[in-house]
Image (tube, rainbow, N blue to C red):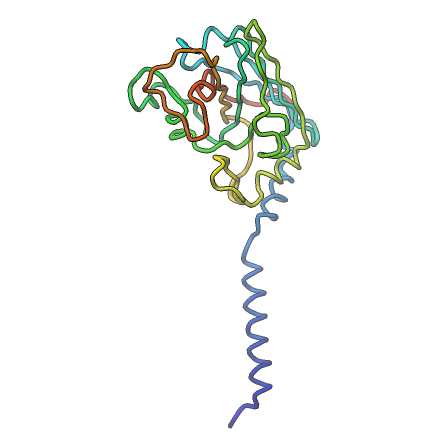
Length: 235
């Protein structure tokens, strides 16, 4: 029996819509991942101290670092402080998804220093730049604290945690900015993550063996301290 043409069209349309429905039911979008992680935000509330160790000490001075992250409701506050570090120097500072600070094992060319290239090979891309706009990876990029004549700086900033999460779980529109995005399989947390501080004075002597990533200066990108975010103190 010959099936009329219009019935064939209706059957194909039904088949296509059914396949689309079942496919969409089995697929979890990035938006779903954001919602899932946002629901978990309440369990992260509290204060998280940051414990720093010096990197590249011969070139980074005798700087002392401390810090704290605090999540209260939807407000994330970040405080980072350096004392007696490189003077009048801009210091970029970023959080990474890794859970170990780089050490001499990352000194690939055995020159006694851990440069930006070697750190990137180990830590990978930046997750959160601690700049002037915490809610977005790109909005405040390049705006970092500058130490005074005594080598001191105090960085304080706060943002909406849910807005920051939405950006972290959004689509990556720039694959060359050395910033990573989270996937729906990544559950965000503070504890254990590391924060890297960079930057020595532009008139500092550095050996020719130092390497940095494209569009970075060797001195501006040289790691000087790494902090590990410790367990939450309280809610």
